[in-house]
Amino acid sequence: MFLSAELIPGYSIIVHDRPAAGFGPEGYRIYSCMDMENIHPIHNALIKGIGRERQFNFQSKLKHYLIDNYISQDSLEEYTLRCDNLDERAWRIKHVEIALRYLKQHDNLRIFLTNNK
Image 1 (cartoon, one colour):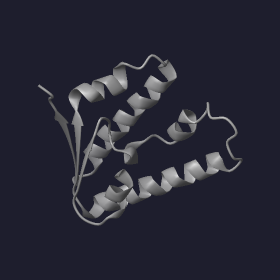
Image 2: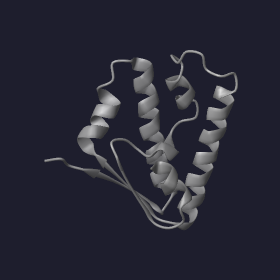
Image 3: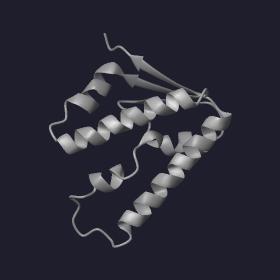
Image 4: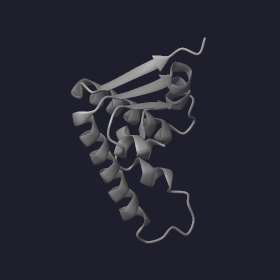
């Protein structure tokens, strides 16, 4: 779903329970796969390469097109604060921080927090 928003030219609307994957901190995907068994030797290099390419595509799209990212406030709070694993929580908070940095740097990005009430 997000991959199409990154690659298809034109205005995009992303609705999710957390910031778009294009904001993901480098290294997070590898961290999240640490518990996987029998991973292929090229797995980490492949994940890093895909992550860099997705961020490049996301940034390139922001140069030319508007992207709106809608996130439920309750979901965002759950994503960042209701995580018992402190390492995982730190990664998630970094994800939100990167989204906020993008918001300041790119006029074509808008992030909306919605209220479920």
